Length: 120
Image (cartoon, rainbow, N blue to C red):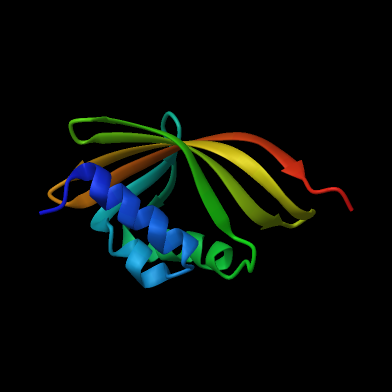
């Protein structure tokens, strides 16, 4: 079985490859995503897929890992994410807090930074 850090790295690699199926496979079937601390964004594979699918279609989608902290089954990533926002291309920093159980992400909580649009 993979370590929690390896599971989260597989998730990040699949995200950057725009491979929605491989990315979703790192999540438990009953996983939950939150806006930190407790606003539910999606619950279960179907909702998580529906929430992520439009993002995975963005041609410039890419997350750069800036820092990672691992403690037991908890993995905390600080990422800088390049996206195509409705207002145009840009980036946003995120803190991603993953709890990995039995080789799958059980919960993911996100702290969203300020959106910065690219200069026109």
